[in-house]
Length: 321
Ligand code: GLV
Image (tube, rainbow, N blue to C red):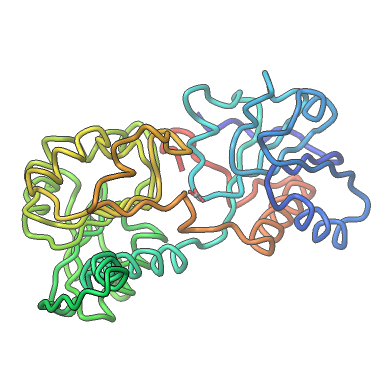
């Protein structure tokens, strides 16, 4: 349940993120009246949270036992899963999320991987290292078919980028609804059609948050319906049955996989995914939070709270975003 708006007068803010110094410097110029403390989220202590009334950051600080005296958390990432599971932030604490748009950056990540696979860049780099002339056919990306699962800001930006390149893009969402005038999707379907649609796709892009409704959605059973697609995951690791991926690649259900997110991050050194020749791994870097985005979203919510109103960016805890 989304809590009723608590009375909050933020004064002491902990910024728990790697870019804390830059974010605090930017916030101080706008709000010299507030007090700030900063640290990487992994270094935030119980003492910091006992001092603070407000927390700004992407993830729950792992060293802190509780959120101390924090009354408001502003999440600087698009996905708020770290604040809702496995233990939900106490209902009395207000949870807002950044309005920053991560779609354009994640679309660049996806396009880079699609071309890397289609142009066989890893293989050509290996051939070049060996001084080996390795002729091959390189089919066009134009004319191929993509399935984008999750059609919010991120999925729509990916769809726009791909359709500009001549890719036919099908969208899958909870409701299957499209915004008629602006949709970048050639067609839209409800999530129930997923198993049927994956077999017709050259590229499958997962752009979903981790919520009770999406967790495990791309299961082994769905993987088994794929017919040689490349799977890209830019949402959350928990959406995908990661343990079934080596089998899906080895049996040809998938031609390749590009993964930016994992069930456990950092991806453990013992994961078989590191060594798979058709897996491209990136360290959860496809949609970086900018200092300007983190700062302006926070200041907007702060100003709204100070007027005693509800910020536009309060998280719907039931939906999980
Ligand atoms: C990154 O994963 C984010 O949720 O912003």
